[in-house]
Length: 205
Image 1 (cartoon, rainbow, N blue to C red):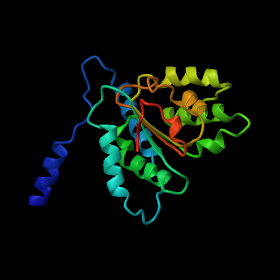
Image 2 (cartoon, rainbow, N blue to C red):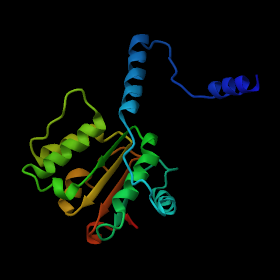
Image 3 (spheres, rainbow, N blue to C red):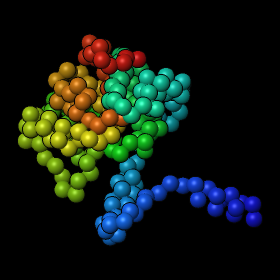
Image 4 (spheres, one colour):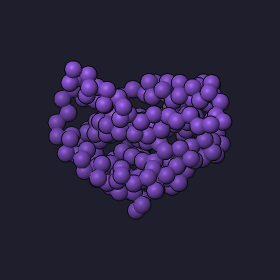
């Protein structure tokens, strides 16, 4: 009996959606279905089986990200030589945080992908489609057009974006700009082997 009481109390304390007067009920339900579908489509990333010492690093990173504040966009950079665990740490951080955001994207292997025939435009497509989860796949014809699409489509959304293995400043300019392309409360994390890519406005660890 005690367990039932506790379960009912827990259920009663859960927050939900409020149907206000004048709102179309069918449209309201459709919005709920769409939100839940988006959450179900977002799955955690695979991280190393036995990550050693990752918790203490995550605590340090979370303090830099200042998750309690939603009044600005925060960018954090992870830098160091290849193979020291930057990507593993970024994946673990993504898994711990992505459900706190409306939308999220982990863009892997930025350095390699940017070498392709369409390079930066391909990366922009990945970012837009991962975040917006549009029924029809969005296409980017060129980098300038992609910048406009990102600013227009994501400018008011609270997002988590992780760019893994960034190697050139033009990749940052094409994908996240100065960070003001996204809604307040957004967090952007960049991993790179080159500290010079991280501007003074980015916290580095």
